[in-house]
Image 1: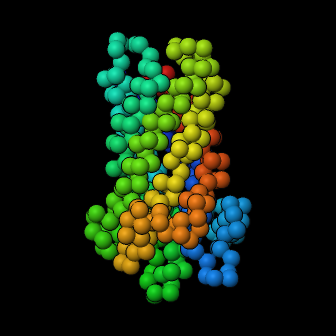
Image 2: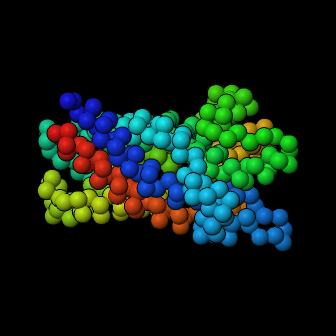
Image 3: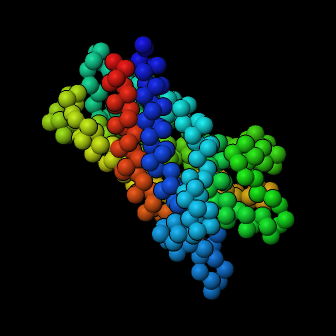
Length: 296
């Protein structure tokens, strides 16, 4: 079995593990990011992450925490297979000799290449996911205008294409690139750096699962610490009304978020994102390593 096929298979398993562990946290993150600004004198819809969980479960049951998972689940194989296979091919190009471990800097460069590749798949997938996750807020706005809110991934995609054409599915591509390119440089770089630190050198082949969990968890936390504001910008743009958009672009979104909420507005949902990042990315890397090792 070729290395590309092995990376495709292992990346798929790793992505599925990430999704099942992390999606409820992601749902709460998007709800907090995309909730409309309250009218003067009124409180926001959600007081915080815990309140968002309570309201979601009360209104939709526990299944509400997994809303929007259909879109990323349908493409998780392609997304993570692409991420890890491009990273693997970048590693092959950067490696001086077969079998020689890459340096942390080289892993960062491989992450940049992988980040560029996956952005074009992540953008339409996350647009659909975010619009489903923020459905309660969108429903209120739609009810006021007498427009029905689409209820499933296919219906959301059709709705977006009808309103904005196929290019509408790529709304938010700029902040997606701004998140994925530096974010994947950081996550793969930190993962390798922690592994090498725990192994006491560049040869990390003897590390156990516990060390991989630690490295994966810290790498995931580093990802969100480095790029979180770009994720907020991406989310608000992707749930914005196509017909009557509030934001004209990424910079306009940043300006309006800062004007309305200050710097803290760029960190809405940060708690759930960080709470998700450690277990979800630990699961991703461990599942990838186990599968990759099993395939030889």
